[in-house]
Length: 321
Image 1 (cartoon, one colour):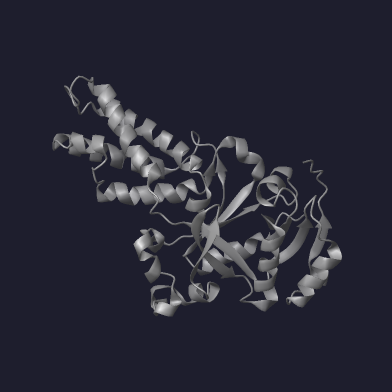
Image 2 (cartoon, helix red, strand yellow):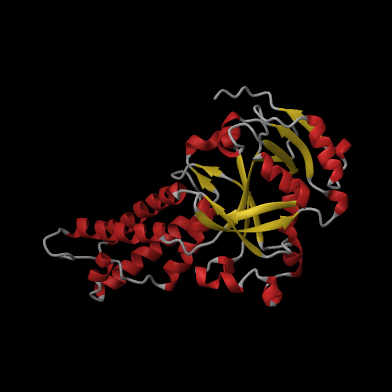
């Protein structure tokens, strides 16, 4: 394994599609996660909001009848942050990798319980992609929240605090309690940032994954579902909305699949626009996978790869069911 390689773990079926179509699938990550990362970040945001509240002492007297001011503010804050976590209008298209190509946890979680494969891609291909187009962001996942050095949490905390104080001053407490209060533009904007930031942060117990993620860094994807029919739909004649290179990378525009009973939008990204620098360099066969090296060699040759230039190995992990 090379330091320059990152590995995408997948099932045999997905592997076949990646090789056959020369594409990587960027699916809506907000559909594929349970939002634990976002919830953990919002827990830090809540702590920061309470710090602002205790420092500023902007409120005096009762906010909610029969409840002391501190408890009332804390309860209202819980309502606000819960609404942010449950908001599902966000779309963030991305694909995940690991620095390691033979990790038991990755086989179990992302490669059909060890029956799949791991594809090694050149990391600098994705770094160059981000240099050529600002519509992509590629970064290593950070593990842990308390130690995270990022202004996004601070900005959202301040926006929420100022928004709440303004609303309370306008006598709109009841709207917080019944969930009808509409956040101000700064909160909405900073909320978008925290969604995106949460994609690159995970809890510390996952640090062994050594994960990298590529996402579409495009604010126009912060849309409600009503806008799906208008965006990333080249057949509608909306190609001028995107950079030309972006349309070439994703020629089919937005498509849909069913996953775990959900309808999930996705974008298939071509990685072979330059035939002389296709980034697939290594394939590792999962510990329980029934595909053999000769199968993979013939498959690579059939679909336009140079099978002699791609290293194929069998996993050294022992996978026990």
